[in-house]
Image (tube, rainbow, N blue to C red; front, side, top):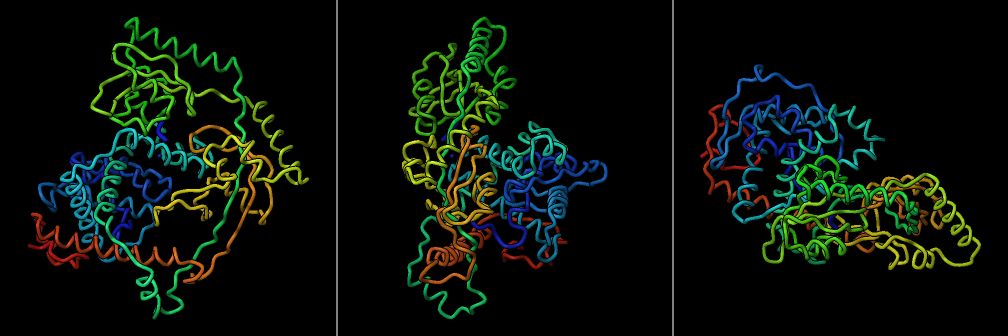
Length: 485
């Protein structure tokens, strides 16, 4: 529904935030299933291992950080997950794993003090994006379920707490380093005496322009969707069932469906404008909205509560099915457009501006862009791994100036579209130079300065935090000093 730091050395994101939560006391058998969601940090569809019987693990509290325990089962679950990922431990895992779990507790504790929050809708959206990425990576929903030995619904449930904790930790780190800056002089000074083989490699970067067409949905399919939503409204109004029950069973917004369609308290700007216009005009929780059409599909909405300029609603989303013949017609139209461009009747950029259905790119002559994770700035220069899977597959065999054949893809809003692309530019991988790749080199220096700031924060936080550990850990060679009081 919504328009959407470097981790410490050692185990980094491999250590599972699920081990931080209170439900860690349930033992390793539960942890093995829940902790698969650490793949949100690695972008890999982790394979689920058979559960270890609880009776095989004698659980105990091995560390206490503040008022939060770290259990032996937490450490064993993290070790199993990391080994399953092929991770090589830095130092003794019996020491490094508890330390990383303790570090995560420090950040989560500070996030609570600073009242940082992650909305249910953000959690749902993030989990859904991750699952969609896995599906694209592995080929199909069925293959993913077979690989992980979980249904999609079970994956969502298992990933919830881990995703929330990972986001809180990331948000806390972002807040702590938000004031770190580096100047051009800092960058030049850092790289001045650095050996040539230590200069970072810049991966192959590409710039891509796109034209899309949204296949037309048949009238009878739209009517079918609307009739279904009217039926849901009628059943709730008559008291036959609840809105939340129908959302769990039928809504095609999977993230919110498992919450009974609830989106959490959210401001107007986070919603699709058409959705917000109806949702923010609701006044009676006992009434259901009219049918709302957005870029995501068709919705009905129920008010839960209002607080100031934020609203909490439930919704049910149904997405029209696109018939294959409509997809084929869109491909034929784009094939004709590509032929006209190649014949010189108009440019690709003009086609993107006046013909494309892609709202994100048509005002920029079709040039695709994304928010770079490192610089946090909008960039049109993509690493191959940052392109949508279907686009990357086409770009792989293209030369600069080439126009692809029409292909089907799923856009950022989860809709089926047909596209053609033009490879505008490609820069092959090379050693960074200060004149051509200043931003890349700046990011290296900025990352190191942020890492230093976080390291110093952790050192000070440890000094202020009650820590108790078992005697067998007191001879460990920890990454951070001060754990042993």
